[in-house]
Amino acid sequence: MGPTSPTGATVTVWKAVDAILRARRMLVSFPGGGNHVRKSIQCGNPWRAGAILGKPRLLRSASGLLEPLEPRQLLSATYYVDAGSGGATLDGASWNSAFHDLQTALSKAVSGDEVFVARGTYKPTSGANRSASFKVPAGVIIHGGYAGSAFPAAPGSRNFIDYATILSGDIGAAGIATDNSYSVVNITTGTLDGLTITAGNGTNSPSTCGGGATFFGAVTVANCTFTSNTSTNGGAIDVIPPFSAETISSCRFVSNSASAFGGAVNCQSGDLELADCVFVENKALVGGAVAATTLDGTRCTFTRNRALG
Image (cartoon, rainbow, N blue to C red; front, top):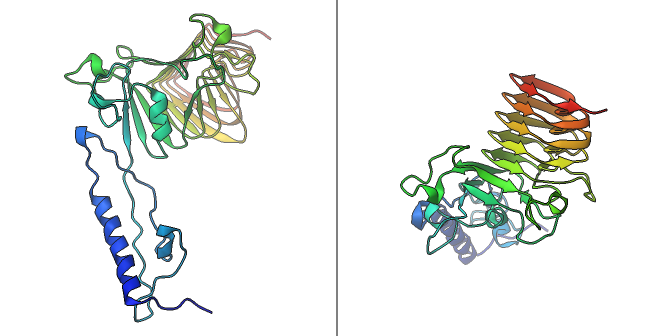
């Protein structure tokens, strides 16, 4: 038996729900200048109005014709992180109210969101759990290298060197590599831009990982520095199967090491595209700088990297 036509009161209720959703789509401004709005999230199935309240039913008018709710897109969120921010409210909505901890922003971000991180050193944990890492949600974009509270007149000023955003695995005893995070960053899909990733040590990790970062899918990396990371495979970056395509541009890999494959980058399960990158003094048993099955390299420089096998 097919669905029956709802009463006029029911139709009125659903139209009221639609009006509320329309209004919420317009009310997107927040104090402090933050753009905390979302995109690329479909809200409501146009042919199942009841899905809004978790009740899959067709909405019919008195004439028996379907009255679909319009699918609508909400804009993406932007979160700010600054270890030195001193605002009274730390909600991540602006530089003045930036989160102190990158992990807080990552816990809120969803696909399509962007996270802007000011200068400073950020660690995956304040404790000594070596499995702790910055787990980037799929589709999230992280930008580093901003002045933040160091330049109050223009906190959005950007310089990767002067305002270095450092993601460090040097947890536990400072300067002791054997208790560092196994992998500083874990990411499935998304973008890393303008970060310095250092001091990851995946050599004795219970699972395969890159010391600096572990990729579980297609990732874009730009304007980053990977230095002093080590692991069994992929001292700086290890790409984990299945097949994926990685794009790395304008990055520096300095003094990373692996006991097996890829002192800087190990990518033996997909396509690796490198452009305008610099590799200096990386080492591994095989592939002192890079170990890859499919490599497309453009305008890259390799200096004093060593394959020890």
